[in-house]
Amino acid sequence: MTASRRPLIAGNWKMNGKTADGVALASGVAEKMKAAGDVSFDLLVCPPFTLVSRVGDAIKGSGVMLGGQDCHTAPSGAHTGDTSAEMLADLGCGCEIVGHSERRTNHKESDELVLAKAEAAHANGLVAIICIGETESQRDAGKTLDVNGSQVAGSVPAGSTAKNTVVAYEPVWAIGTGRTPTNDEVQEVHAFIRAELVKKVGADEAGAMRILYGGSMKPGNAKELIALEDVDGGLIGGASLKADDFWAIAQASV
Ligand code: PGA
Image (cartoon, rainbow, N blue to C red; front, side, top):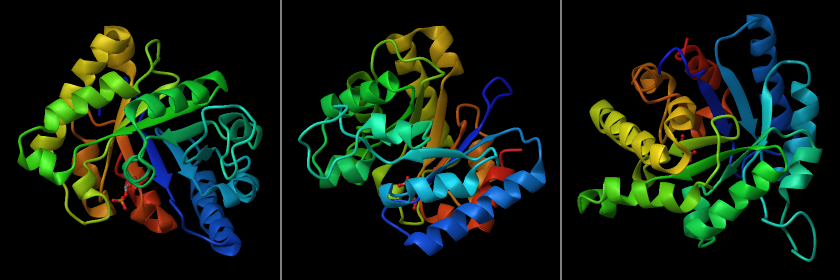
């Protein structure tokens, strides 16, 4: 974290929550935000598509931002089961996660597709939160930097800016496992990602672009992770499902 980049604390609810749970969670987060007044971080919740509208109502006026978890590349058309970036923007989303490893794995999403989704987000005025990260076997094989470098090269659209793009480094083996890289390992990868972003978007945008850490971030480890020079916040799964834990992580960025 450096003073020039405002931390972003983003909750990825994944496929969790029925209406009552989602509204209660969103209201809990919104209440904490309202009570806090002026804060030094951005706070974002990304509920499943079924809850986007209701969560949007629950957080209205609180300063908590709303985001989607994925989108189709097209604005509309014959794409059964899909949701467009235009639709998310229409519901009040300001951000959208693209290329999460669960989508890269479960839906075989390629870098090319993730890049096209990020472009669709940009075209609709949404901030694209582009996820990258190595698997455990890639790390064991010493390929961590290669993998993340090629995902930056392949998934981040040319012309991305610090305003419309956030990169989330999420080691696949750390997601939902309670395991994390060491602080030095996290900082090494984040600094490397920023250097790769320089090649893609230039030094000014890369220097201002937020790079989040994701993968088993919790209240207990958030402070030391977010304190790292090139870590500008977190993308939080499990711990974003409890308002108290999510808020504690946000407080760790202060
Ligand atoms: P986790 O998930 O915090 O539950 O590890 C993070 C993510 O997948 O974004």
